[in-house]
Length: 237
Image 1 (cartoon, rainbow, N blue to C red):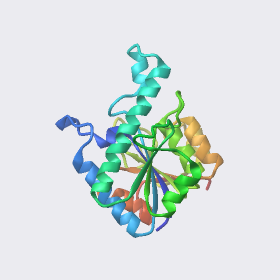
Image 2 (image 1 turned 30 degrees about the vertical axis):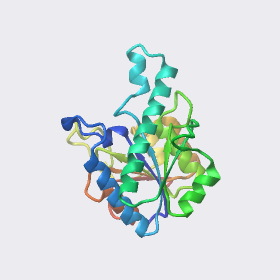
Image 3 (image 1 turned 135 degrees about the vertical axis):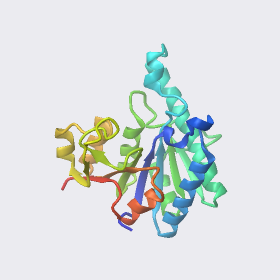
Image 4 (image 1 turned 90 degrees about the horizontal axis):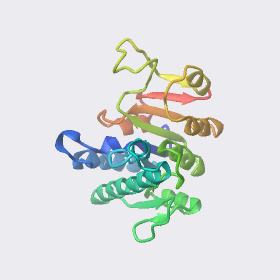
C-alpha cells in the first residue's frame, strides 16, 4: 500500500443512475463495497465523506428561492441519507461501519468525536462522516479536508468523473493534457479547479496529499491505494 489511512471524498452524484431514475444505484454501491473489502484486507483504514448533490444542493436551492442557510442545512441532511445508503451497502458485504455526523442525530448515527473516529479506524471499521462540517456556507470538500486533517489521514482521495487534473476541462477541451503530479502552488497559480479554496488551503497547510482520480474506473480506488498510476497527485513537491 502507498497509503495506510485514507479519506475518500465521493460526490452524491457518483452514487446515482439518472437513466434508471435512481438516487442510489445498488450496483455502484456494491462495487464500492467490494473495493473496500479488498482495501481492508490489505490493511487500509478507510474514512469517507459523501456529498448530497444527488438529493439536494444548498446553493442550487438558494437560486430557487430557499434561504441559503436553510438550503445548506437541507444539503447536510442529504449527505446523511447518502451516508446511511453507503453504510447499508457496506454492511450487506460484511464490513463493519460507523456513521458519524457533525449534527447530532443519536437515533441514527454517532456524533463526531475525533478520538472515537480514530479508534473506529484502528479497529478496522469504515467511518462515514455525514452532515458536512455542521455549518452552512462550507462544502463537503471542506468537510473532507477538515476530517482528513483531524484523523491524520495519509491522503485525501477525491473521486471524480475524469481520470485526474487537466490543463482545462477535457470534456469541452479535447486537447487538454493531464498532470500526473502537480504542486499545490502550481495548481493555485494555474487556477485549476480541484476543490474549493478553503478545502484546498487546509490540505496544503496540513501537508495532506490529494489524489484526484476516476471513480468509475474499474478497481480505481484500490489502484490509488496501491500506488499504481491512477489519477493526479497534488503535493508540496
